Length: 376
Image 1 (cartoon, rainbow, N blue to C red):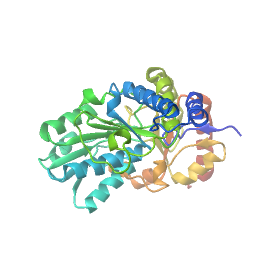
Image 2 (image 1 turned 180 degrees about the vertical axis):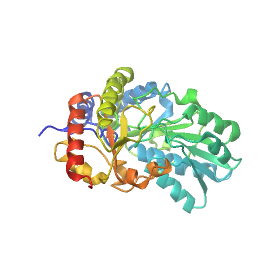
Image 3 (image 1 turned 120 degrees about the vertical axis):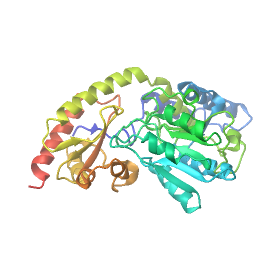
Image 4 (image 1 turned 30 degrees about the vertical axis):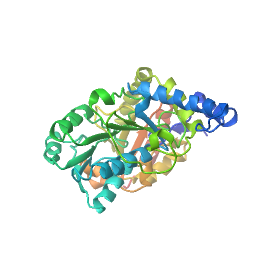
């Protein structure tokens, strides 16, 4: 049976270049990057080469890039690190109501610890309501976190506008964006946008799981989550995973944002055309969403039921975020969708490896599900 993998917002297939980079580091250049002998220096050079590639992809400098185990660690480092660093200046933390669970759950924990956590509401398109966002900004605000692209719907947030509002009204606050779903899909310029901290991840761009990075602008200080050695200026101590970092660099190096966007835009348009021909299917993503993601609802069929029906024909999609493990989407709730749309929602997400054949298989599977599973 052919595999039609349309769950690329959960993870992507590792590219050949990334896999080979990791393999070389594991089998040939396997020294500890902190060791002072030649093997260690060779490994360190590979880590620094990857750091340079990723810095260039963000129009940043190498000194601003810190490697982590992924987006979740980067986001946790920001929220807890910034909260602890700035707690004497205030206690208000603002996150959007549609953040990834690694930000959302961190914010809930900070609320339990006594911080004044506020959730910025979004409109029906999943975009932060600017006026209501401004009303949350006070002199006590120390951190704001709003994701660049939503992982369930593809909604794109006005990050530059939001960051400027924060710095104008709360000059002592730090502005963070989780750019995991945006990285290597749209141009990211944290310094130009006034972003203090930005999280990215490797396995969403055909790198390996277990590696991510955090951009920290010059002068932005946060406390570490971990304590140990001297690596990465003590912000993220511990032996760097040189194989995964090298793979991350290889994946970022081969990413062609413009070429990939053209491919994905064509697939998205074709998919939406076909989806709109199906009775009972509603597209939940806004028309100006990142084309890599389409969120839909299938009337009368619960998400997991349809997901497993599609799987039988080799079509792989998600119900909301993979991290949610099947729980109801608070993102779609925040957008004001009715319960039946939320309970029947599916996320379709593309990569450069997808073709129209994958979409045809999806449409065939959805139609079969509608014919056989829909409540009469």
